[in-house]
Length: 253
Image 1 (cartoon, one colour):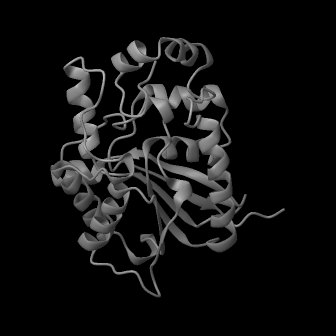
Image 2: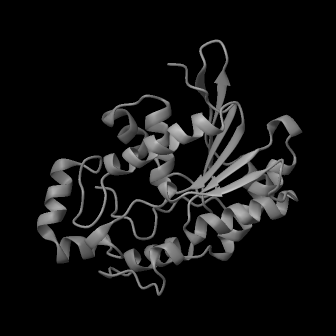
């Protein structure tokens, strides 16, 4: 069966969020709970995240017309929606006939269930058995009570990619979402296995406003990796590069 991929696909992580900052502070202080007032879905960008998002928008604006998005797919979480809005604003683009904007709940952050808002110390202190189970099973398959494993995220992203190939084949598509989404999209598009994607994840966190992109190889009708965690737009603008884990994410083992 022929699959119609986008001609260009960018997958960007949101800018640094207030949750990233709160998580770092809680970990540094040895606290069990991340002190943040927002629901995860409502966590906004930090001031640095705003600067990073604007830098990314300026980079897109400098690209030739044939290298600019025609479709933007965005997580419903505030930090991702703010990132997408600032990219559009800085690039001088408005959704309309030539640029379609779509918020899709399948791009939401991985759900952490009972581990929500807990630091590494907090997880070991409050749920020692879950902490041990996670270390044994590994993050790819471990599902915290009330939350998701990476496999659960991949399942909803399979549905998303089917929609993208059905509705946006041949288009230039920008996805704005979260760190786990970036890696799970890579798993699907590059046909990776558990060990391969976890090795990529172990190398480093996905930078805030880092971009991973693919180009359509028309000879094979497959997407070819073009850029991985591309941060040149931030460096060119003098915006600090941040690579914090997501604020409410269970930390790496």
